Image 1 (tube, rainbow, N blue to C red):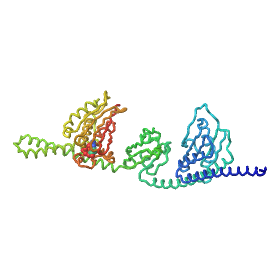
Image 2 (image 1 turned 180 degrees about the vertical axis):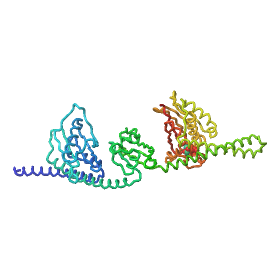
Image 3 (image 1 turned 90 degrees about the vertical axis):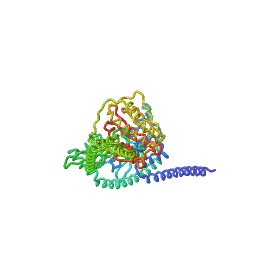
Image 4 (image 1 turned 90 degrees about the horizontal axis):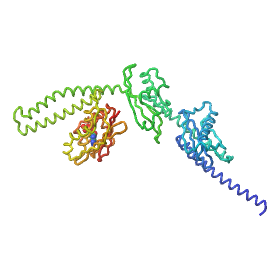
Length: 528
Ligand code: ADP
């Protein structure tokens, strides 16, 4: 082979290799472009971008910092491929922010940046400084909105090809950001109009405690409640009420909602119910807290009228019923003359129904006392074991009548809470009474008591009919009964009374249940 032929062959091989590399780069670029142009949120877009870059670029840390103009916050994704030292990560963070701010008129504040981190860092002594790096700005509508940067601690510099491809990807990323910002702006303005027009007040804080929504209704209600309250003081105001706390530990805040009534005196008397809820994204990450303010003046007025009415009627009914019961007892004792068998039977039916009415009226009076906040507790140190045994004695016969086994399982040496012994007996009697009522013949009921942190917990467990999932929270409402034959015998007031008594003690009551398998009713009493 001649020298010229040799040179030509070598050149051919080089060109073929270059073509192969170019084709690979193009396919990567195509994949990235495809993925990022269809992503609908920043998180998935940045995730795809950072992990794809590694397909053709060798780096230790890759950072993307994007400022989301509409939300006035910024997001920094740091992806570490080869373990690096924390000092290097901090240097990269600072440098990226500095690079972005040098291109912007309004600088991004470090405290407004939410940082997401992937990868691992190594011990401080292993610090290896960055050898090569480059940053590419991302633009949207001629404004620098982000920086994409790669850093390596190795000795090989980035080639011209790497830089060219990196720029091409950054151009695609800029286009995607522009599109996403457009979509966000439209969505945000739609939401703004909707929230602004709501009759309920809406206040929202993000996960850093920054006020992000305050509509006109909320501003009006809050300024009437606390004249002079300004936007900067809002978070402190809600924290002081114990309502919204975006900084609360996630475990404590676990999807809990809290509500309380605010009494407004000016310009006229109003009751505004403030309900706070934590908001989470689909990955259960807390995004912030929202407080809804709703005018409940009418509802509370009607509730009060209802409670007053029930209380009045019950009082009025109690006196004649006591007289009727006395007279029936006298007749049954044959004070007024001898009775035939059928007369006795009729009078017994009358007596049983009078007793039922007396029970109903006493329940109604209990409920109205609880609702009016008039329930009084006579607290003393109580022994839950004694109370449980008393209830077991009392209900042994009704349980025996249905061939139901009634057992208790009580932890040794239980602490003794300060509570109203009669009221606690009423709660346990009610729960066990219900368990007997809703458990078929031959069933089992267990009462358990144990210490649970700062509380004493009592469980009443049965293997009866169970309660449908949708009814579980409603059974503690007044007059609520799950549909079915058995339920008609009760009043639907037992559980709301239990709830009132337990909450007055500072405890909680709840139910767990599975249909056809049984129910577990639990309540707690504070030990401190
Ligand atoms: P009542 O028992 O008088 O109807 P409650 O307020 O005590 O009223 O209970 C409300 C409803 O909750 C009952 O009607 C019943 O549907 C349901 N319930 C309560 N306890 C149980 C239980 N242990 N098993 C199944 N359902 C129950």
